[in-house]
Picture 1 (cartoon, rainbow, N blue to C red):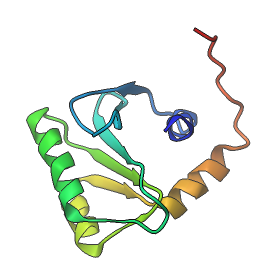
Picture 2: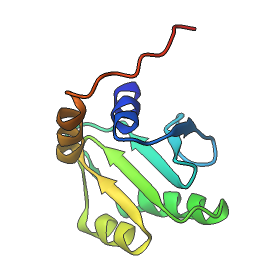
Picture 3: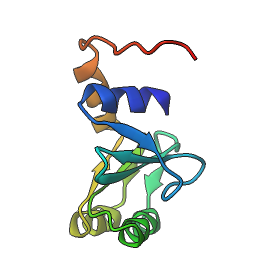
Length: 114
């Protein structure tokens, strides 16, 4: 989770945790306008449409009109189609790995220990 948050930060997102979406603390607000959920599934896990529907419900309830689902696995075609119709970006394991590689050369934003 913390690695993915760091990758998103290095891609320019401002990130806050939220309890308005996500399970097990996986809910994030990106740039104050987008909900994101990180699913801690394995590489071979395929995300079904129900997870996307839950995120869409949270978005509608909170008047948020963009979303992002992030997983190490992949998405079923029906989940991808639903996400496309509901302005939810699907980030699978391959895309996440590419994002990690792209920001690897970016200097880390060091935060003081608390």
